[in-house]
Length: 115
Length: 115
DNA sequence: TACGAGAATGGTTCTCACTATCATCACGAG
DNA sequence: CTCGTGATGATAGTGAGAACCATTCTCGTA
Image 1 (spheres, each protein chain N blue to C red):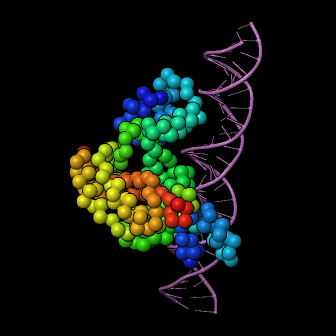
Image 2 (cartoon, each protein chain N blue to C red; image 1 turned 60 degrees about the vertical axis):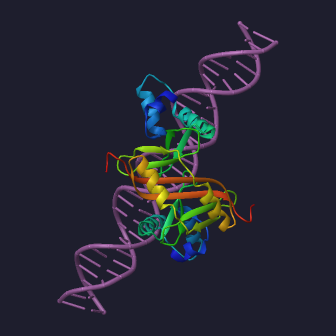
């Protein structure tokens, strides 16, 4: 399953991943795909993106803190490792009486190929 | 419908909004709620948050560019008007050959009451 | 090797958010 | 008044994801 995930550079839906596995030699059930994805997501090995409303996309990602850059046209996804937003986030949170514990940034735009 | 939306300081699901309307004197259909929410969302009057996986939340928001601060415990939502991330976003995008057209930031944490 | 408890798996069914469809209704022009 | 057009609400349909359960795998013990 991790092999199949690694074969996809961008993000996949659970259903898509499942049918790819079935097209291969695997007999994995859909339930197991969902269970495993949930496990991997808890473990921080895969990221869950919900940009397609109604369906979630999964992506094998580095475990370090990072954000995502998504191409509007071809849906290519790139990790942005450099995040020095901590200061800004904390300040913005503090200004409204919050204590920030997490932040997610999603940048959409056009990739080099689609530009 | 806008009245009912304005009555909710945080975010509501379409289903929740519909049942509130029906509990009142309205005879609005569920389809119309979805239709209207889609319209308002296109017009930029309401924001769509997808932090509850499987269901989308809607919120009456200012039309200016802003981000959201969500309380992990009580789900209170606050708008963050101040966003000077444009520079960082463009730089990060450029570094990966992208042209950024939009960015969304969601900060989760604990609000003053839940802290 | 044989056995058995408990965990993992896969098939199936179920739920429910959301969409499509369609008959009906309101309204405005002629 | 009448026809047409666009909006509305009820209902059925769709599809992602979760719940359930029987079966299979794993592994320690005898």
